[in-house]
Structure formats: structure tokens, C-alpha cells
Amino acid sequence: MTKPTPKRAWGQAIQNRDEQFEMKRQVVLRTAARTYSDRGFHETTLADIADELNISKPTLYYYFKNKDEILFECHRLGIEAITDGDTPMPPTGTCTGRERLEEFLRRYVRMVLDDFGTCLVMTGTNALEPKNRGRVVEGRRKIDQMLRDILQEGVRDGTLDCPDPKMTAMFVFGAMNWLPRWYHHDGGLSVDELSARLIAFVMRAIAADRCDR
Amino acid sequence: MTKPTPKRAWGQAIQNRDEQFEMKRQVVLRTAARTYSDRGFHETTLADIADELNISKPTLYYYFKNKDEILFECHRLGIEAITDGDTPMPPTGTCTGRERLEEFLRRYVRMVLDDFGTCLVMTGTNALEPKNRGRVVEGRRKIDQMLRDILQEGVRDGTLDCPDPKMTAMFVFGAMNWLPRWYHHDGGLSVDELSARLIAFVMRAIAADRCDR
DNA sequence: CATTTTATTGACCCATGGGTCGAACCGCAA
DNA sequence: TTGCGGTTCGACCCATGGGTCAATAAAATG
Image 1 (cartoon, each protein chain N blue to C red):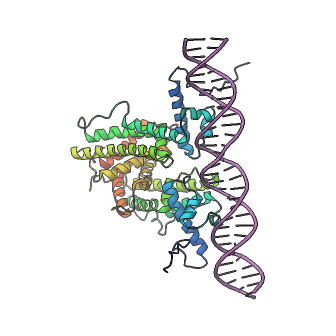
Image 2 (image 1 turned 60 degrees about the horizontal axis):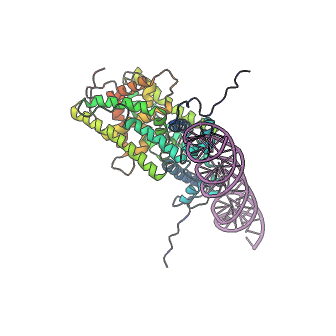
Image 3 (image 1 turned 30 degrees about the vertical axis):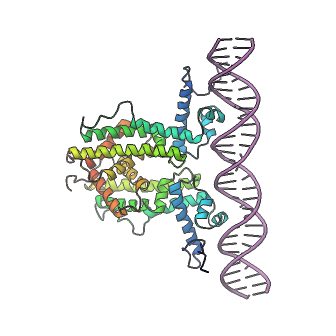
């Protein structure tokens, strides 16, 4: 008699002690983010998420207030991944605008292809309750502003050349936010390669020395 | 006694005769597309659509099989707006790949900022029932292919210069599909101006003679 | 062990909203 | 006037799924 594959609740994620609460929360969030992303928020029932983790629906309510809060936390984590990543963006002045732009794009692409970033971009903010939506919208506005500032900086220091930074930012965000809809991690292309390609594309469009390569 | 503001059902759209059936269908579809786009498919109830037209919910079922069909028709119209527009795309060979690209982008931008195109891009295909989803996915695949072909043609005839047409197409679609999320018709920028800006951006990235302007 | 605290669950509640039905209404033709 | 399509609606049905509760199990505590 071999072990009948235990099918442990919570998967392999649990081995520690007191911060288990926080860990379990994280596991729920990852699962939710993934499911929200590829099946859609409204197409995902709480039972779906619970089933995937071999737990019951009420257990989810032990860790979260309601379905909205789960979505909100996913968005929050996605936003945080950019605004305060582990290594802060190099401060203005320490390098050219063009260099900062490259760094920003590299980061953003990585973020948007992570579970929470993908969820942030794939699920609309309509589902969120007003207060939470406000916070998410504010967060995204800040990120928008970051890119605009970087572009303007590049224009000022002569390393970038785009007529309308605001609109350019939107084009670039569009290209990036669309990535999760077609890029698949299991393909032959790594995230780093992808971001390199995207950076190349953008740079050809707006780098000041456009005749190189 | 003045007239008590009639509040006619169907608004002003009705004056003709037998094709009224088709007209009313269209009116429903436009209304639905708009509402789906800015409130989301699942956040829009049939009652919402009915109310907006001053008709009742069962009336909708006189014109459509169900909620899915309404969404599907919106997507279908969006797709048709590109694949068979009133003026067909100039056939391969009659002009350079670059010119065809410009024409395609101009068209696509116009389409994606129209009610049905916006709906196509804003609402996911998750909501559609399998069969309809298949048809929509197929339609979108064709459009993808169009752009890829154009890019390759441009590379071949030397008017475009992009290393990876497939990926480039995705970047460009991303930038365009994101337009409805930030562009507002009431602002100071016309759709034509916008598409010109976008085309300029793309061309700087991949036109063969990248040193002009 | 006894007891308190933390986790987990089966069973239930109930508002929402997609979908249906039969009756009524309207324009028109004989 | 009667009849007959095409059209519209009030009232209803009911599955789905978010959310709750009281009761249990599993740790921790002493």
C-alpha cells in the first residue's frame, strides 16, 4: 500500500509557524489573480478559487472580507510591484532620461507579466467598490505620471525626442498592457528577451539618435 | 396645457416602415455596445439596456435570442468594420507595404474608436458561449494576420524595417487597442489627428528611412 | 487534561438578474 | 367589424453565487 497522494489543503505552501496566516493569504491571492486573469473576474466564483486550493468557501471569508477585497489586494500588489520595487528607480539626475526609460520599461514589463500585474491589467476596475476603485485609479495615475516625467526628462536632456510625451506614454502603456493577452510563459521567449525587444521598438521610435543600430 | 414631453420609446430613430425591425435591432446593439464598453458586460443588466431605450426587458428578447447574442453581434460588427469596410483595402502590389500599413492603421484606429470596435476590445471573449467565441476569435485572428502580412510585405519591398513582424504587430495592436481606455471623443483631439500621431509613432519605429522628419 | 483561541466547514439564506409566458395592443386588410 | 400578424409588456420563474452562522476540529496555552 503506497500513500494515496494526500491532496493536502493549501498545497505545499505551508511549513512555517505564525506568519502562516499571511502566507495563506498570499496563496489565495496568487490563485485568485491567476484565475481572475484568465477566466475573468465575474466568471470566477469563490467556489472556484476555494476548490483550486482544496479548501471551502467560508474559509476564504476567514482571510478576506469579501470578493472585492480579494480583487483589490491583487491590484494593490500589482501596483506596488512598480511604485516601490525592491530596488528603487535611480533618482532623477543620476543618469540620462533614456537610461531611466529603459529601466522603467524593463520593470513594467516584468510586473505586467507577473500574476498580480497581469490581473491588474486584465480585469477592469469596474468590479471594485467605489472606495477601493479610487485607490487603484490613484495608483495607476501615479504610474502614468512616472512615465510621462521620464519622457519629459529625456526630452530635456536631449536623449529622447518625442513631440508629445503624454500621448507617447499612452501608446507605450498600450503596447505593454497588451502583453499578457498574447505572451505565454511557456513559449520559447523569455520575459527579459521580450522586454529587450519592446525597448528596442520604443527606442527606435523616440530615442534622439535614431540613425544607429 | 403644453405637451408633457412625450418620452417616446426608441428615441428618434424610428420613422421608416418595414425595415424597422432591423433598425431597432441596430439601435439596441449600439446602446448595448456603449453600455458594455463603459460599465462592463457583467455589470450591465438587460434591464439597464431596456431602460436606456424606454422599452421593457421582454422586448429585447423579441429582437435577440439572449444576452450573449447581443454581445456577439456587437463583436461581429466590430470585426466586419475592418475586414470588409465600405472601401476595400488596396490589393497587394498596387502600392508599397508602408502605404498599406498606413491605410490599415488609419482604418483600425477609426474602427476601434467606434462603438462596436470599442466594445470588441473592451469586453473580453470570456462571456461568449463557446461557438460564438470561436467565431470571434477566428475573426480577430484574421485581422492579426492582415497586419502581419502587411508588415512582411513592407519588409520585402524595402519600405519597412522590422526584425520580427509578428511581435511588432502585437506591440502595435496593443497601442491601438488601448486607445478606447484613455481617448475621449469630446476632447480637443480628433480621431484623424490621433491616428496621424499614432502612425507617426509607428513609422518612426519601423519605416525603412528612419532618419527623415 | 482542561480551556481558550485559532481554523475550518456543512448547511443555509437571499438578492440579483437572465430568461419565459400569456395576455394585451396596434396597424392593417378583407 | 372582425380577424390576424407583428409587437410590447407585467408578472413570474428559478439557477446562480455572494455572503452568513453555528457548530466542530485542531492548535496553543497553562
